[in-house]
Image (tube, rainbow, N blue to C red; front, side, top):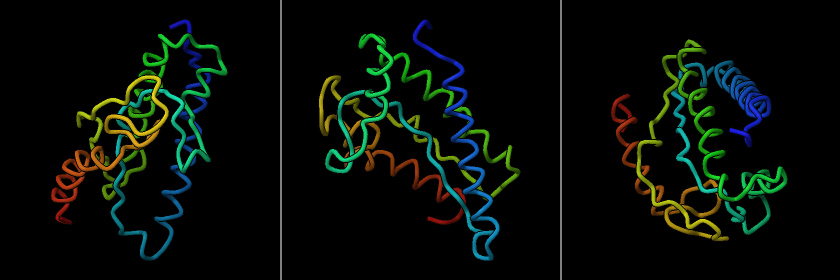
Amino acid sequence: QDCIRQDAIDLLVKSVDQCFAQFHNAVRSTKKGEKLPIFLNLYSVPIARDAPAVNGLIGPWLWKGLKRNKVPPALYQPVVERIFADLQTMIAKWPGALGDSRLHVVDTDSVALIPAQAGSTGESGDWLNEIHPNRSGWSKLSIAWEQALANQGIA
């Protein structure tokens, strides 16, 4: 708990919430977008590690932030889990908060992905990099997506 700055997490969540609201409003303000279903997934909780994306050009995000803020490595995972819990709670509330029955949250968090090996710097387990699943991870997640789409008569 000593490594958690709730004000920083709240700021992150508020920022993501505002950005999504802008995206949502932009989509819904177009003729095609007003009836378009929007599907979102909850993030599976990653392992903070030095595994950037796009051939090392961007990220890693979590690992850099934890390192910069001098969080002891043994506490990386509990801190990441706390951040992602707050983000997932916010995302799960969006359909109701925005009053949008065409906005759907796909429960991909319940899909068991093989965690990346702590300290690895590239693809590991079901993870391509620090926060994105790899082919095997997306294959597992696709089952939840297929069910969500079928529930809406799309698949």
